[in-house]
Amino acid sequence: MSERWDIYFGYMEDKIASVLLDMDVWQEIDTEEYNHGFAVRIKLKNPNEDGFPIDEEADRLNILEDTFNDFVQSKNFINVGRITSDGVREVIFYSNQEQKHVLIEAADRFIKPAHYNFEIFDIQEDETWEFYFDFLYPNKYQQQHMGNRQVVDSLEQSGDSLEVPRKVEHSIFFADEKMMNRFIKAIKKEGFTIEDQSNEMEEEEHYAVCISREDKVDLHSINNVTDLLIEVAENFEGEYDGWETFVIQS
Image (cartoon, rainbow, N blue to C red):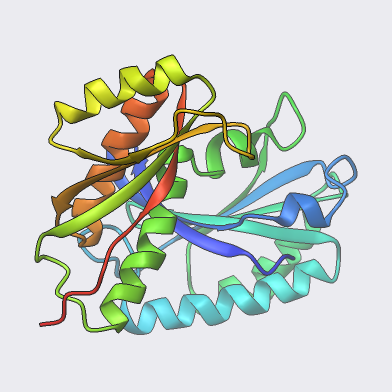
């Protein structure tokens, strides 16, 4: 529905999972009207060791999903995302219809001929769109990982040697100056240097601190760094606001 689709990775029952999600769909439709959730669960035929489809099967599934989603969307079933983990893909829908006969019809048309085993089931919710916001929507760490991936992809496109340590600067905001100072004391113990800090409330009504440390910027490394900073900032009622660095070409 919206133009803002993104992907992140996490764990489900100790198995790695990828979640592809329409991040803004809830702003595009009336969630009070489209208040019935459904999942179409498809068992993969040849997943890799992480439980994900690869190569030809990944391409076939993408085409199958696009055709399936176009058909059901015309009948008021909106695809909001999908979860892939442990050799299973679940495609998630919300609809203004209580019955799932449209999904069954689509499965008979598109999934059965592809010879995939599948199930279709209702998503039980105590509150409207609870599954979407509480289970599918990324937490603050995962959202930062999404942002990290975009920066890392940009660096990589510029020919960056991602595993070469270099100075990386991070920004953190605070509503309280005392909390900011406590954060500074704590983060110095993690090897960070204070580049700049505001001692007066800025126009955006917050105090700001810029810190730096030499780190690698491959995705795994920078995710670990931002996870640490988000956690420490939260301990002192702060809000992590991202990072920047310069390109080191090989």
